[in-house]
Length: 177
Image (tube, rainbow, N blue to C red; front, side, top):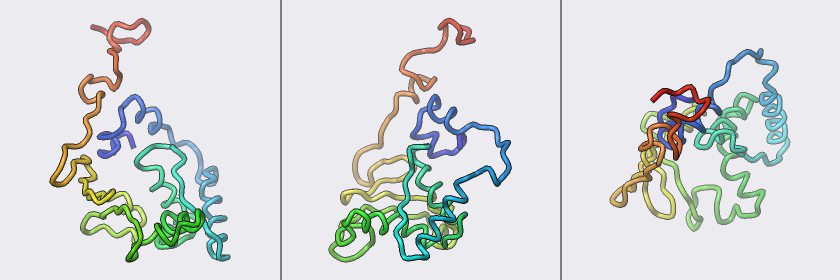
């Protein structure tokens, strides 16, 4: 994930690297999220609601991971996508206003890149070309507004180290001037 172009664009390296670089030493059965996703699938099969949540694991990708894990647990991609949209709205009692694309509902929309289809391959959920929020259209890769303002500029892209202060010369940093 530390090499993911979108994450690198929007998350400073001093946050992205420690949250995404880990050795993969555990066997598959140690990953409890699959068992949790199997239980979520059973709940959906029984007519219950399951909502997706990112849990702030890694902003920009964590909710996608949740959707992907639901499929690892046996949900179809469509069941997983409903858990990420309509089920949450229903749980909050807002499904008359949000949660699906219908006339009269409010909607922020993610437009998927051409050729990607998360209803067939859930991992395509991350292949977002445009984000439409409050009627404004943004290029997802840059968050530049179409026909509007330039996207955000982040301090770590200008300081070169991802911090608001230089590391060079600090005791114990191992850096040389």
